[in-house]
Image (cartoon, rainbow, N blue to C red):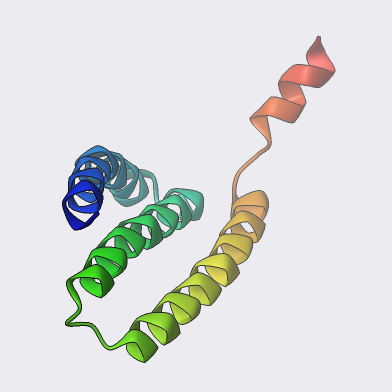
Length: 102
């Protein structure tokens, strides 16, 4: 079980890391808070993989992992809501304009 989970975690992290870096670069270049929100969501997914492996190895403080995971989830969800609200105010809705023109 541990070996299968380790393989799945490594594959998952290998696939998520380039996406994280791409959205991070997008946030740095465009200063769009939604890109940073997506980075936070991907970061949370990466944390889930690490935390799961850490728990399976048996060296983990389970309470610490639970509290960290719950706190991270709360922070990411609040930031995502805030990022979309700020983005709506700062950037024009290009999709809405295209739909009205059609």
